Length: 154
Image (cartoon, rainbow, N blue to C red; front, side):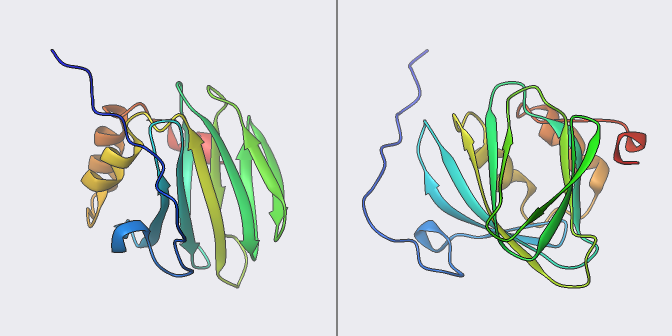
């Protein structure tokens, strides 16, 4: 078995409202734009309309960060509810349960990044345009993203 090819960081700018290499993903109605993709880090922009969310889950092998750019996110972070506003940075160490929810009446835009990338880009490629939440959960588990039972979102 050969080692996976390393992804090097390419210099340049990924402009607002676009994804690296022109790519974007639609994951259960939310639009994601990859901003930087390397083995050591994976950055992506999310655009969450009011009512959209990602349920509580765990990345056992990655640290994750969110920089809220516009709007407000409600987060369930290690069992507690917190709010992040434009300009706030959320830190989520690997193994900590977390989920984010746009409970406001305005869209929210945020920059997320995880380190190291692990299988996250491959996961997003497989989740693109899926409409069945149960299938999203199943495929996510194969890519080191483990969703907790629905009651974890209460």
